Length: 132
Image (tube, rainbow, N blue to C red; front, side, top):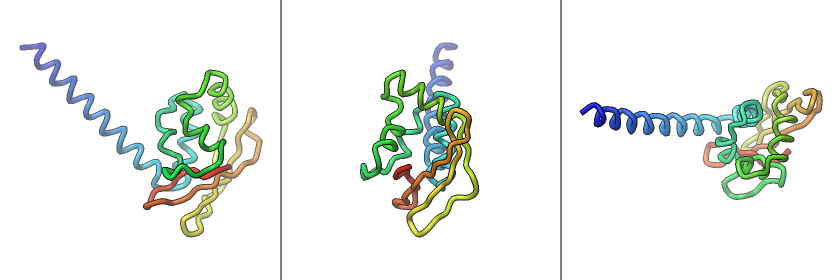
C-alpha cells in the first residue's frame, strides 16, 4: 500500500515539474529582456535546457545565435567558452522595440566589459533571438 502511494506521489511530482518548466519556458519569450537574461542564467548555472526555445522557430538567425540555442548539444570546449563569456553578462538599459523587432544592449566577456547587442524578432507574440 505504501509503495502505491509513493508511486502516485512520484508521478504527480513529475507532472508538476514538467508543467512548471513549460510555464517558465513560455514566460521567457514574453519580452526581449527575458530572452537575453535566460542566456546569462544558463551560462551561470550550466543549465542549457531552456536555450533551445530561444531561437527563431522558422530557423532564421545568425550562426552564433543558432550555436547558443543548440548549446546542450555542443562539445565541452564550446560550453566552457560560452560559460566564461556569458556568465558575467548583464543588460544595459532597456530593450528598444520597433514593431516586431527589438535590440537589447549588453556587457559580457571575461571581465564583463565587452559591448554587444542582441537582435530579437517577435513571432506570434513571442520573442526569439535573431542575431548578435
